[in-house]
Length: 301
Image 1 (cartoon, helix red, strand yellow):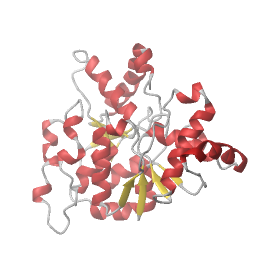
Image 2: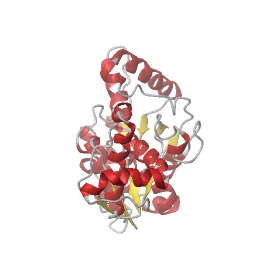
Image 3: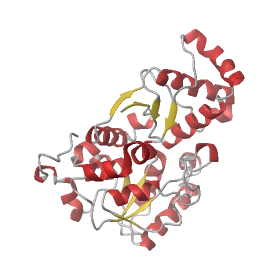
Image 4: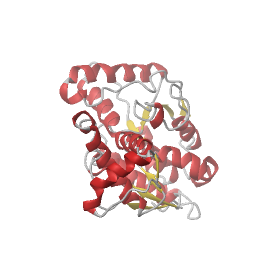
């Protein structure tokens, strides 16, 4: 099993722990991944408002490069995933694809439309499978109460949805159960975190994140699991800015950090120190168990 891997800008900067924990998880599960060479920015939220065709060219270049690596492309960043998925859907139209290919010709690239774009969350559960992941778990995170937060971009629009219910998705909850944790009901699972409004209208983003955090606390969550760099940053930032008003800070973990701990990855590999909100002291055993894990089940991460 081999996947092409497109990290995007954030996984090489503010969300570096997402990249290292993803790579740790795939190593632990025995999956070969190869980073797409010379990938470019997906355009984020800005490019599509500037020029829709420009956004398609950006995506098409990445897709054409990925086709040379593997038939499956894993894209952890929700925004990159959303942009690439929508572009791949649009470029199924042969006439439109040929028009975009004319812009790739000077780069000696051609998009054939033969690579499938996936979010790793779906790949882990659909291609790897729950049973294989469960067998690889060396330290079940039993007793931990978590809420699964998906945000906007894995569920909207329909063409970019990861595939189960847009309103009540279950992939992340399933993964939490597989790792031994207890996912709690969470009505804010697909609410917007405020996104890039954190830069232009920070007070709006803080209110949006505050609704999500309040719901998580009411439910009794000990941590929030996320799949998106922007969501992770906004939910941590909102808690730090409300410090003093709310004493209980909730760790906001990338799902790959959470899964990596269950698979036996050490805290450095999953990048726990890069999170702004540290794990509570009572969680220390979850990151220090690798030396105690049996050699026959120790993860290679």
